[in-house]
Length: 437
Length: 160
Ligand code: FES
Ligand SMILES: [Fe+2]
Image 1 (cartoon, rainbow over the protein chains, first blue to last red):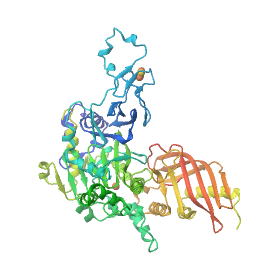
Image 2 (cartoon, chains in turn orange, brown):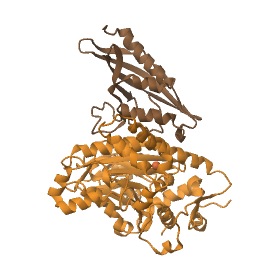
Image 3 (cartoon, chains in turn orange, purple):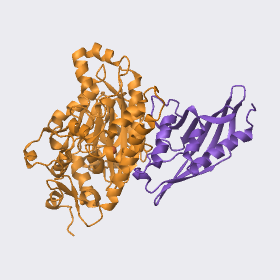
Image 4 (cartoon, rainbow over the protein chains, first blue to last red):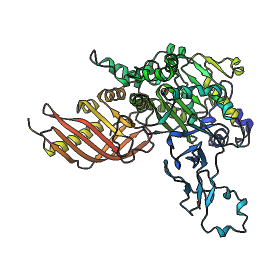
């Protein structure tokens, strides 16, 4: 069988207009190429500036499978560095977060680096005299990810030196982030409540597709959301509404609900469900919150912000967020059949704590390793990951509500049950799989 | 009404684990007070279950939903079903306060959850906050601290 490495035609042939080849989920070589190209050519979410408020604060993470560290530099700016010692490769920042002061110090041979990555000192420096060390890659220090952009505290990086600009890459899709941030009366978010980390034995793209898969909740989640509704109905009349039932129940809304909510498509694989309404539209008001919003923005604007109830926004390749509940998930690829799902939650600065409380409950019930809704979904992904090895049909179908005219429409709003956004993601995937798209 | 003995408290903890292992979940739910909680922190030494997230922070209704779901005909993540197994160290009685109707035990445990060909080992400490209701011991709070509470996990579908 011909391989995919160095064979761009074979890679591109994996994505057809309405179906994708199973190798995109199961082939380790395709996975390696994704890490090399898709995760280098796109702008990938790294972290949030509130995680590193003070000079020297750092947060370690990955872009694809590449280790990086986000750090607050001495001049107050946010920097992203490759988290690898230029000497022998040791990981320099080891904790998930911490404070390193003005310098990183490698624990192996004590090379030290400023928080912009440049070398501050090397022990016994005369050992490098007359060796042309200064021309070596090591002399550059911890390599910075130069293409790093902070958008209203959300930090994104593009590993590739050259490529699409941040503005062109995201375009109008930033409106979803804006809405989430604007829900704070002071226009500011803070990471809060810890991070839930959930291993999935499946390819990362299955999760990304699921985010705009509106034909599965009433089926796959009947077990959890349907049971929640049934148990609730058995409660004695007059029992106060349980906040968790408010979270669970909309999952089992009928098809018409999802058809009507709409899906918006943006260029470069971004998109969102819930154009007109969503499963988050009917949550109870939190006392005092609207008044704070009204005071900050005026009644009309406050209402416009809070009436926008987008469901899931996908920022290609691997971040997704929910404005109405201030939650964000990252699908971190680990191997072709292994993904780490991180669920992050935010406090709306200046808003009642009750909002954070609801956000945490949502993540705990829907996205944690202990979540019934999470169990429902993961079961489907794992079964697919295994059964895609069948040779009965090597193609995965994404044809629902397909119209060839969509190829000429980079931006659109469509029926909420279309698989257009999944096709959109794979068209972006095919594009960014080139070494230089 | 007789106050429980130390042996009663220890017996309660052993019985509670057995109900879970035998998947007698309806009986298990009856061990909780009406306002009882099952809490599994996400953070080592966590004190706040409300504004910091947890793996579980269920009241009785949420537990009831889980228990009913496990029985459901369309619960595909339980086809086939999970099984589990506790090994408990002898519970230590940390508080014995008959006047305040307040009892607390501390129990190191190993717990296995298995489904299909996978088996996962968890280890931690359970704290049972107990009281007597009409002469019967009930759990007001079962707090389960995993030794690796902040690790990434795969599915945890049953109860520890
Ligand atoms: S590996 Fe870092 S100083 Fe040698
Ligand atoms: Fe789902």
